[in-house]
Image (cartoon, rainbow, N blue to C red; front, side, top):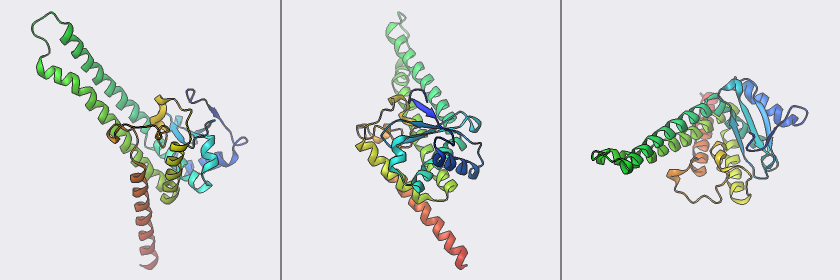
Length: 236
């Protein structure tokens, strides 16, 4: 929150935003999270907090200008889903494990080139030293992408409107390509869409976010499935 220069807001400063978060938190059976506003023209949002009791939802000033109330509601539900699913804690654990594996790999590499003994870590040890950090990073990024899919689904069910979140994601992806962000690179993975999508050139395998097109496709499929179930209940 400090790195992104987020400022807390209360019901008097942002009544519509605060009221929307409160309504969705009640629907999700969550304690009321703290609400923060980030002075950033790019439309985006993130959640943080190690557990629901310490949950925080932060949105940029840009998102309030770009999204309709219905779309904003979908985004806020997505962020509350991260809190409900304890994704921040899980991502932190994954990062620590990946960091530890990378450290072991670096230590083995260092010992292989500095040891005076004839018997070093061997070919298997060197292979582990080079491949383990890459594998750990891929697992960490895979977890991050899978939790985004889960937060989309959970958030859509909290709001009861998968199509609204799908529409919001399309606008946010466009905004990430058109509007530069002030967000620090170290916090990019927290946001609902990658704030640096417009300058990202890495392969999807090394991305912290799943493809927006696939997220939208899944949400619209969920919308269709819910509509089908509703019609079946109405018509028997």
